[in-house]
Length: 140
Image (cartoon, rainbow, N blue to C red; front, side, top):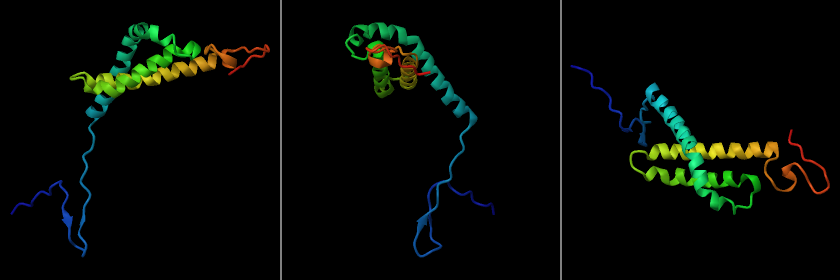
C-alpha cells in the first residue's frame, strides 16, 4: 500500500492532553518572484522620474504659496507622491506601478530636501548660508 502524502493544512496534534496546532508548512519564494518585485520597484521609480517635471509644472501655482523657501516644490511633490501611494492602488491594471512610483517619489523628494539642507539652498533663515550678523552656517 502506498504511503499517504501529508497535507499542508493545519491539523490538531493530539499527543498531549491539550490539543494544539502544528505550524503551517511554508513555501519558499522563487527567484522569479523576487526579481519581479525588484523590477516593479524600478519601474515605479522610472515612472516617477518621467512624470515629475510635468506634475511639478502643474502644481507650481499652488506650491508658490507653501512657506518653505527654496524647497516648496519638493514639499508639494512629496504630498503628490503620498497621495499617489495611498490612492494609486485603486486604479485598475496599473495601480501597483503608481503605488510604487509614489513610494519612490517620497524617497526622491526627501533626498532632494536633504541635498538642499546640505548645500544651503533652503532660502530662509540661518539655513540659507547667511544671517543678519554676517555669520554663515556651514554644513560641511
